[in-house]
Structures are given as C-alpha cells and as structure tokens.
Image (cartoon, rainbow, N blue to C red; front, top):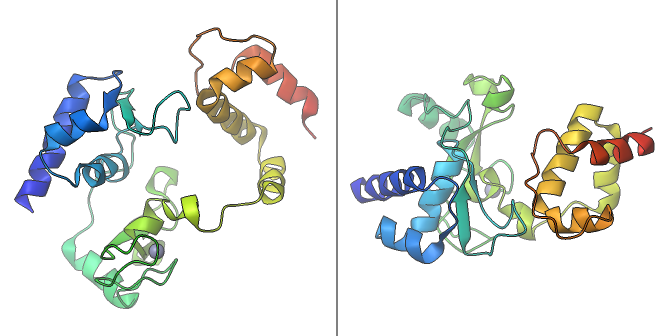
Length: 218
Ligand SMILES: [Zn+2]
C-alpha cells in the first residue's frame, strides 16, 4: 500500500512539474517505478480531480500520451469519506457493483482483473451531491471510472441526439466546446478554416461556432 501511495505521489509531483507538457507512458512508468502506473494516473484524475488529459479527451494526443493542462484540481474531489461509512455502503450493497453486478474480489467480466469496489456518488459532489448514504453507491472501478462505456453498451447516435436536443443551450455549448477541443482539426475543416493551430477554449467556443449552432437550435 505504501508503495502505491508513493507511486501516486511521484506521478503527482511529476505532472505538476511538467504542466502543459505532453508526457509519454514510458516516462510515467519510469517515474512511478511500478507496472500499475496507469491505475495511479486514473486515481489522480478520479480521486484527486487532476485534469490529466489523454487521447480520449484530445484527438491530437496519441494513446500513450498524457498532459496535465491545469495544475489546480477540480473542486469536489476531497476524500472525506470515513472507513466506517465506506464499510456501511459496501455492506448494504452486498459487496457487489450496483451497475454491472461484478462482485468484489472476483474476476471482472470486462477485463478479468480482480474486481475492486469504490464508493460512487449518485449525484456528483461537484453538482452538490452529499456523502449521505442515500447518495452513495458501491461501484466497481470499471463502472465508476466510466471505462465500461468503451466496450459495453455505447449509446447510439439517436439516443445521444435526443439527449443533446433536450439539453439547455448552455449544456449544448459545453458539448460543442468539448467536441471542438477533441476534434479541433476536423472542426476547422468543417468550418472551412483548415489547419490553423489556434487553441480553442473548452468553455467558450469561438463566436463563429456559436453562431452556427444558434441557427440550428430548436
Ligand atoms: Zn461495475
């Protein structure tokens, strides 16, 4: 356990010393000094709120590249849950992931690794969710970290479109900003401005993009 914490701390320091730099998995493995370095990077993202981006977030990153763009972790990630509360939730939920049914300690159906359960929030803490038992649920690390979305049930375009159409304008713009950032090259081509390496802000998309979405709304 101490070795794990040590590896996570080493990675945290390294990322904070190299904010904005693209780091490769070779480097991170070396820094962490353990083969399970990727799990520690996920913990920095999911438990500590560091926005470590990968190719899932930015299409210009290779699958072995990672970058921490902002040194300050997102709010709402503080580890405040007591051991007793954690045990209570696991007990209540039968030590079983309430999303996929994987059982703690048994091989997980997704990757065959030993299932580890985490305590997830039904309403996220960043959205005002509390640590009350009614807001807590036992989830395996695969479900809690969203990795199951990659291979299990991907939402269809039809489902997504319905959801996005129903969302508020603000949330639609957030989706647009996220996609424009992830697919910046493709977005520029669609708008007829190919290959201009401008940085695109995630929260406020460029005005040209905003106008074209506005035309299409409702
Ligand atoms: Zn699960």
